[in-house]
View 1 (cartoon, rainbow over the protein chains, first blue to last red):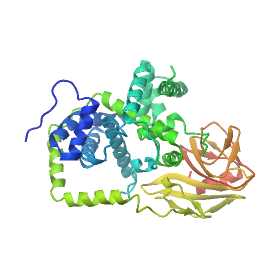
View 2 (cartoon, chains in turn red, blue):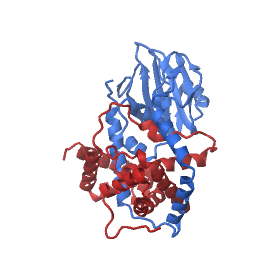
View 3 (cartoon, one colour):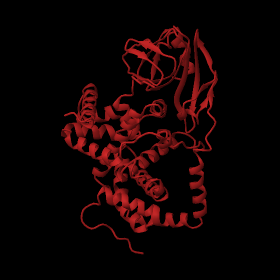
View 4 (cartoon, each protein chain N blue to C red):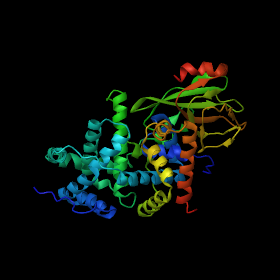
Length: 192
Length: 230
């Protein structure tokens, strides 16, 4: 079996979405290889940044990619882009892992995505529009605000972690997180 | 429902990022069930997660990781087709095979996100104040409480070390910062001694969870402390 890896730059969002759809439609292993080479190392990096040890991060990243294969039919490009969808899978498996580590594994799992699923009838903003505006808003943040946002997004204990990384007092960090989120909100709502 | 009080952007971001603990996450999920605006914000923060995932510096996998993934897929595909079809059908049938709406004692419908939780009996914890422990199925350690407080009564008095998330289900209460109605969520931070009082037109039922520790003050507080295991 041959797996064609991508030559040149990384595939764009539309190409990644087509790969997931290819898995859903035809169990396309070449598409899976493309997704794997792009996302597995990134999901591993995300899980490590959020505090998991290296080997656990890789195990869960592996499980994330297998979930992508199994649940490809559930991917809806009108709801979320490929990266966002795979991010939520990684987030949910990370939560499951941390809970299993804390409690006996006997309990039934409730998937957070089920809790968050919107009741029918809701008009959703098109995922492509939302992702384009989020991308533009993130690009418009100052370097410091982008870093504060990144650290508070990935960190399990946001404020104390940022305080340590930036060498700032906790109170200062709290107000900077608020400012960065306020700026992001203003950008998303079209103010400047 | 006219919702006036929402979770902070930081809490919505942490829910999207997966770093909000189970108790507060359930309170926020209960808010989201009734608030399209906050659902959209969570979707935006999930998109932030997608963009950050795109931009993160990749960490190389072990050399045989992809081969191992393919072997796992092969193992699943052999004989798993029928099981998968059955699972897909069950998933498709799920909305119709809906659980009957569970009721809180007193005939109040339980919010959808709590339907899988175990709801304890109402326990008297003070004059006009009852509480019920809510168990999250996959996280027995989560601290989640339903409070049922009579008209004109104070909610259990406490000072905070952490942040308290409270979602109003029935009735209303008022504190120094405003009036809270069904669908509203308040986040009270530590350092603030606040004193919510239920409005006079009826009892108030709310769902509350605490992130971090709590120091109860006053006689009610000391009474409730062992009950809420804080």
